[in-house]
Image (cartoon, rainbow, N blue to C red):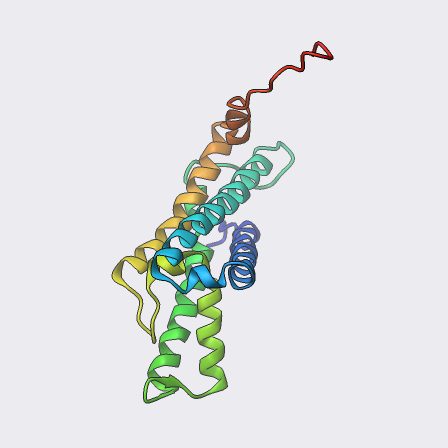
Length: 189
């Protein structure tokens, strides 16, 4: 574990946390009515998962670009994007364990009764909020595909972002080429 990129993995964890918090507050402030309905929650989660995906993708892409500089100690390799996402998975596992403990040990008649239980529940809820419509969290239980979503999306986004940086594939410039600018007849431009 001597060569594990701890600082870069922390960058990805912070990108996850910032994305999840931003999406959580936007969801509560703007889309609270939408989130409460099952279809609205799924549509909201589809949009927020895409936003989250791009945040992790972009962070990994930028990490790769820094790794490719001649003066940095870190050296790029194709699978590093997968290694970087291990930190997100580790935090997710710890928060999920606390979430389960809260619902197993700190409830009375199916209701959380302790402050620690509320905090554990709230932390995991915020951490997974971009996927809330997909993972089906309810009283300490997550759907079987929720586990897959929470694990696969960060790894996929991180790998694809790092790989894109590794092979010099700039997604922004590819989308920019699709934009057509209409010439103004009056100015001749």
